[in-house]
Length: 322
Image (cartoon, rainbow, N blue to C red):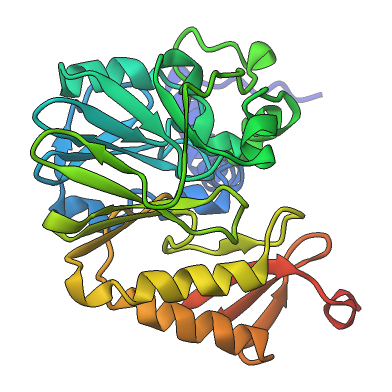
């Protein structure tokens, strides 16, 4: 039997060679663990926006217009964007996000004025921080009242491993994560106006994505906050509460406003778009409903329909399921 004795130098060399040989494998494994949606971040569109409060552990905050701040959750797959809109007397927080980070703390750093919450709709990813605020205005619908009771199942699905990009905030307990119930302090309706002091926001009822979906119009400044009625990613129109006829009517209403707008601000992925996107959105959804465009199965009983760069996630037809 031959005994091999290796010097320290030989051992060190062997170790270094093993690192070289194994590092591509380790790198490939670590890359495989990163969700596909996360690899596209950071999105290039944010480079032109003014970053605020860069030390926040969960939110990315950007000033997108005078007195308007986009509060972006880049660490979660929904990439939700809430908006703080500040006037001389008070502010509106349009959506409160996932409820993972402390959005109330963010608003207190951005403004000392009292804050009223309005929700673009009441899916869990837009109402997670509602419970932190005294004044929450809501549409007078059964859907709104039901969701105000909170939920656990939808919230837990949002923090599955493939839904997260990076670390959760320090002190956050995933096992206890729920969408907490909140109190609707005042019911609102189409045409309702909020005077912020030197700035007025008008509520536009835009059902379709949900029965309680709304947009906010800052007519004087040419800003339209569209919630989930429009955003630059697959628009979800497949859930039981979706009404496609109502959605088409709603986007037609928004498209009619395009000539007087300067910016369109959606609730996911990227906060700013040109108003010209709205008439194109109408044409795209009408084309989809008439059977045009590419169709790709997406998960169980769903399909993505693509026309002119717009993507709509719809319930799959029997033909698409097969």
